[in-house]
Image 1 (cartoon, helix red, strand yellow):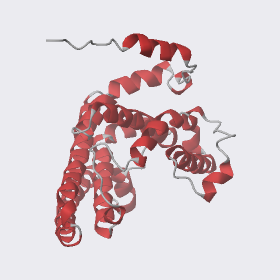
Image 2: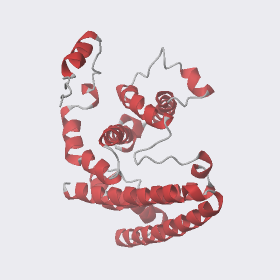
Image 3: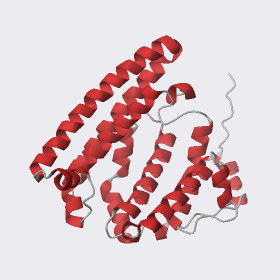
Length: 272
């Protein structure tokens, strides 16, 4: 019996890698030693793996780097020590440029995006500009109509009012959970624009009362999510019966996202 010859692909791959010029982007300005240490401590790999437990390794890697970029971007505005936190007009400019560059990197730019001419004039801020590396991978995912879990749900379902209401509850759940679990850290750093401080200021509640009210709203939020999810599935059974399983899977993914956010925030809060 003849045996097939196994060809080692490494020499050809090495030759290809050696021949093609490339450059590694300088990301060090984004992550000075103190910030890099915090990113490692916060364990975004844990967050990502809990957030998308069904994702393949390559998609999970892309999504993890997206998390790193997004949380770093968010800190630029939210932290009271940031120049953008102090100067609202600079923060608004930062948000606007970021939004348009995100659209540019994902290949979904519009007329407003074109005005920035990012092809010839990339953003000056290294943090915004660094999205191009991640965006190249995200764009491939978006262009193939698949996400971390491999769902392929039609646009009319993703823009359905019930789906949008579902996203709202997911975002509220994450925001409120974060507000509770990050409260001590944010008070320590003077970042007191979250739910509990707002309730204390606007409604004259004690801190304990505000915490209790936020907890109650999270419970109401979970109930609303379940009700909307059930209503959405009933609607899909009538309008897109062939997509019921995928939408059900997507809803499960939303639950994973919320639980992952809570568990990760809790783990991080223990390190503070």
